[in-house]
Length: 247
Ligand code: G3P
Ligand code: MG
Image (cartoon, rainbow, N blue to C red; front, side, top):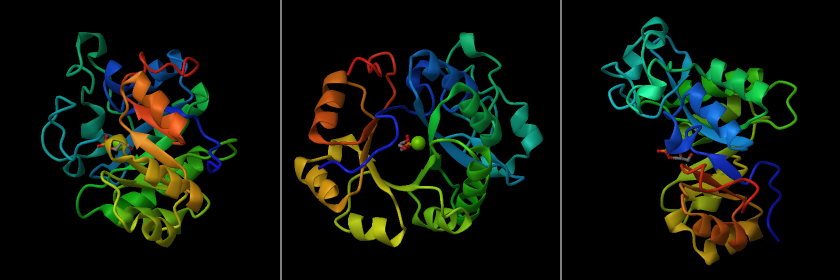
């Protein structure tokens, strides 16, 4: 039997997937417009220690800024354009703080899978700060956010700071030690690259009572197959192809 999964089964990757600039408020709004009730996004610390939404350690790919995120103050990050790289329609879209994104999720009724994405050397501090802020932002919400990370150090720090928030262990390929890792870190779920999902893994996860989340699934047939196999949720870049009510 599939383990309980109280969260949405379709989740927008980095907010609105590839249809909007990743990790922006515009992406969150777009996810809602497509009928999504759940989003994933990446959280990293600024040079001032503020959790902000960005995927890469460096600013070049998704903003008009340069250098490392951890070397920039909040004021510097707030001036950046995080939308023009995607297209002129999103010119001037800001790089949001986690607080802004969390508040918008609450307003829009979006559940969140908050990926803690620490810059190297900042694992524990990022886990701690992201978890504390997540707890504050979702206080009183029906569904708590799910914190996930590739970093066991960040997950352990998140567990210590806000033990009541559920956590997910992220991996690409699934290591043989996955269940011991999940147990050691007190994680609720296992999140892996969908290309590494096998019926055996789904069965084992079900037997262990661990929901399995897969990224990044952009083909509706593949999403249907995985959900049919017993995967709890899929994270997608193609919110237009995977319709929440059509699968
Ligand atoms: O949380 C799933 C997925 O976002 C992990 O990979 O690199 O897209 O953050 P990445
Ligand atoms: Mg991510």
